[in-house]
Image (cartoon, rainbow, N blue to C red):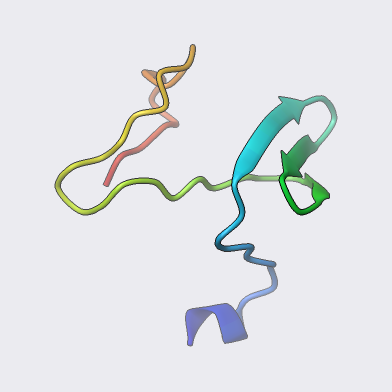
Amino acid sequence: MVLNRSDFNVRTGEKLDDVQKNDVFAVKTVHNEYRARAVVLALGRTGAPRTLGVKGEELPKVMYS
């Protein structure tokens, strides 16, 4: 219901290959390449988040909830 009321695109079920940040994010998946102003990665499950193991994941703007 929220997705129908909002103005953004959601891609599910795509394996992420690469994300690069320049003026916008360049997102590469096994299926396609996208350009975006923001990227949300939904990983893991409630109570047991899977961390990415990458530089910067300890920053305050990265949330696991």
